[in-house]
Image (cartoon, rainbow, N blue to C red; front, side, top):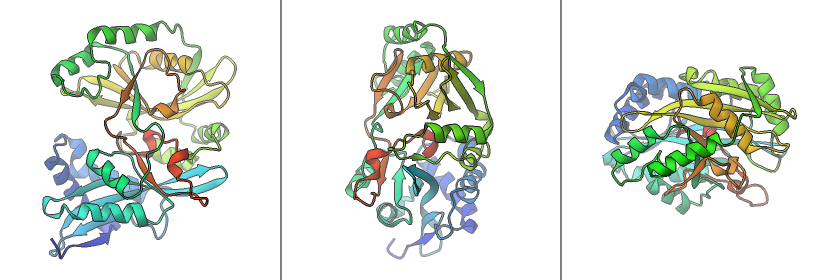
Length: 361
């Protein structure tokens, strides 16, 4: 496909892009449910790029490859996110919806190279890598943020996880990291041994208050998302399917407070595993008691959740709380390009959460 060309994605391209993505996801083996239909994809595209408060003039919505006949045969969408590092505000772009048609396979490297090396933002990253794309990123100079090769899980009910392990038949049980009935039972028992919650939780949609709390607790030496009220409203209220997101403000007996955003998911071959994934965790910067928070989260989710997906290990203390299992990923899920004025890669100080990515939707 030598006569194809790379073009910026515009608002007018989004309906056609949604059709291309629907076909590409079907060919790639994604489920055929409505979440991967063109109407839902178009809604998500508009939310990610049109209604995004971090949208900037002069920054395209991404790039696509068009054949000589004008048909979209490849895509890479840019989702803008503002990051904080010390007193600086830095624009980041998350690459997503990266697909190429079979006849345009070679153009995938072109799209990725253009994004990693020259996209108009100091921070460029991907949050849903596989073995192939991860290798490409590293060849292009990308670096792996700390903790992106592990994820933490907490089993609340062991039977659905065991069922998934049996159905996987010796394969890598993605949501069954412990692997045997006795281990599942012991994980649930260890969690119960933590005792009664010492952290109080309360639902909140006060974006201004939550933004102030995020700024108060922000680690100034780390690269984190700028959790302004506008960003929180866009990410957790205006997103497609906001009813799936539960934002809880928490406080311990000493008055130390933070908040957490959880998303409801279903996974497994029969969609039998009910999950709550932590999209964002804002712990108190004073004496973060991980075990107490974990116990409160488990108590909050116990009625209708089988598994807590806690996120990357960097979000939690080096010593994981009791009841938590560590899943060592075959391939790091994140990779980042860009460096500060001194040449230090941003990836070395990045503390990223699912909310800044696209793997959990």
